[in-house]
Image 1 (cartoon, helix red, strand yellow):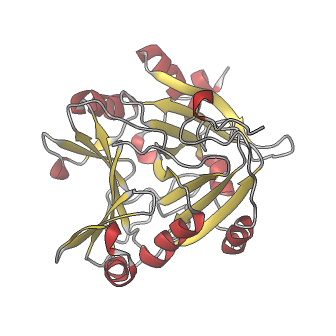
Image 2 (cartoon, one colour):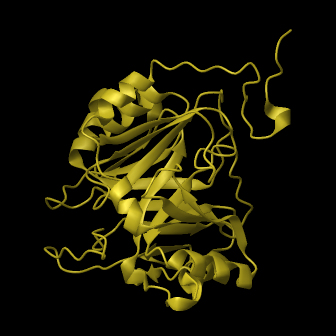
Length: 335
């Protein structure tokens, strides 16, 4: 009997919002922004010789690097996957990502003191709205958090039809609605639990399920332009959910970008099973089996050294991509 029929799908309480992927063009400037301004740490860094089979770096075959940044271990803290394609000069960024909301007085102070004013959109007593070197928008709330809590509170995406997107994420993906912070213009969704301050409820593999980063969907009532610099959000779930999620999406007529597959080398005994979906506006969603991902996302004490070592790599394809992912966007080789 297959996994898809042997098990029932897990509840939303057993899933975790892991990270959001951002395509970047300047690794050092981005690292300085995330670490020196926002106050995060480099958790992991990897260098890849060719494109990811699950298109984690986009639809590119070029060498690329992946840098994970966050305020703590990925088992308990939201992270950002910063992907750099060596043979891509730049991207067109659309209006798919609205903002990331972070609660941190230190980040606010850092931005006011050290961030170039051209990256500051708004500065008020309560909050600061800033942009990363590639234009990703961050809302910094000038408030402290309880020790051990995650500073990253919300990731906001824009959608064309709020009701359609709400149905997709709640009915099909089983996310819950934060009724107290939702209205006719946006809905705030979450996985896991909202328990007492001292609670530390974890999944079977060990992921923290309490008080996760929430997902906000903003209804714009217009087409969403994702450009070529679009991101991807990732959620963990029990491995046996992967086939069930794919089967459900296919039955409902929604797009499965990349059918269930395993990531890892031939000799890798901790292959990670994933499925990549596309929501009604094309926002990409990765579900990964938590059992092996928990092992794969351990913080690397040498991550920062590996990051700086990676800066020494200079692959350069004469057919370099300018901004897009198709053949027409490549720079032609010079004779």
